[in-house]
Image 1 (spheres, helix red, strand yellow):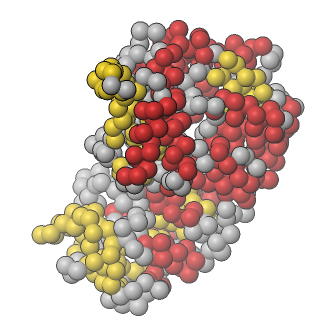
Image 2 (cartoon, rainbow, N blue to C red):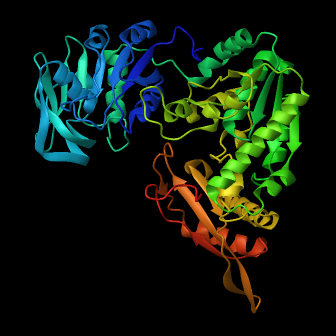
Length: 515
């Protein structure tokens, strides 16, 4: 069941395995054009059925000259719609058109100056010279028949080609990354001028359409939704409640591993503000018992996940016959969990968890949206700002920000320290500028001096990062005076802490979370 209105113009991004493929789809949506990311060998019949207004061929790690290199069916190029090839996609267009592709003496990686050499609709309002981002070993050596070169790099290599008669365009650089200064303008030129798409799509457009689809799917059935406190499950629940009202019951399993006051905020929002039927399960002691003596991070995740499922099952059974389960599955979850043709990056609980163990049909109203788009829908539905803009929070909660065994005392220390950190980050106006900011409690103690007496207490580590999508992240350069206030408050206000440290590692090689 599609989650978008049927009459929306769409662009299909065919994925050849590039690290930036998902980013291309997101950038197209930022241009207010709906996009979908599909495997490179999606059957042409399926593409024809979707009636795309344009097709983008992504980059990829392979060489088009490799044996068994990913290819599209030549029929894709006969659909009569504009095509934009990016990096590998450019080389593929050239190869299929009879052009020459191969290695050069100088590969290009990183920042390279782009020189526009010919007038082109693709480079409308783009300066003759500008910064761009390259990541390739192969390049087009000889343009295919019907193509002309419209841009080169500072080293003279071909950076863009086009066959305007067939509306085929290709760029060797990556317009989707921020390092390409006029990359968004290039994408807009392709979408608006070449594909003739009117930029009217927004995530909020799907609300009424999805409400109607949920009603059609569910009928008179009974639905449950597992609330986590995060924006995804909250928005999915509110969309479903808007569709079917009291046929929905939300189950909020409070495992005691959330941040300060989050359980109360969830209950107030859903039961008090939206009047959604809610079962608030106080399961803190149950989860602490399950985690007793457990220090390995993967074991923690396993125990918390299993205990959550058991608790959820018990509460669901008490509701009688339940037909449907609402999940806050996002488009990024679907992509990252792998498709028939895409490598599996990681398994997401929304894609491969509860449904395998419980006999429900799934309702997934957010399945075609990215996280930033879900926030727009949440705002449109009236979800409180604190929930809409909550930074990503792991399902196992504070348990994986405590290194070693999780105890009631250590949870108290971390929860209070984290609350101070977030309070100061918000006061300084940094909360929405950061991808994540949180406190970590290492499994050690250190010596300190407080009130002329020796202490032997916990250190707290501050972790704050900036990111677009969590696939890569850089440590945030927070002002020294802000760090000083955070440190002073944590040490003075949280009993059991005598030291604060700052994590200044990026991803990679580190991860954002510590466990």
